[in-house]
Image: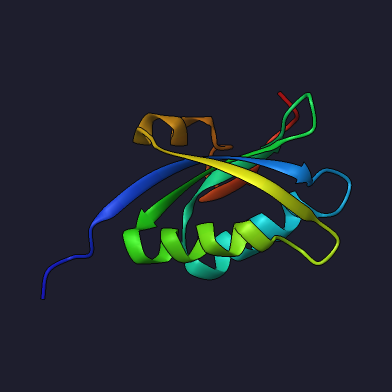
Length: 102
């Protein structure tokens, strides 16, 4: 059996996604799926996420991000294929990091 295809996705989530626990929720959802990456708030109110792992698990994560935690209201998600170089922004030793606002 071959290894599943690994993908990296860059998401920009817009709506009521700051101040509602979206970053902590995204971190928990990514860790539950064993994904690598990071999440951070963006100046202007969006949440930015990089998620990397087997394609099926990343796509499942993206689907969950469209809903978010119960307090959130997701209006739009911009999704792009990304380079694994974005993973370099994680904190050392962490598979998935919550980063400061950018």
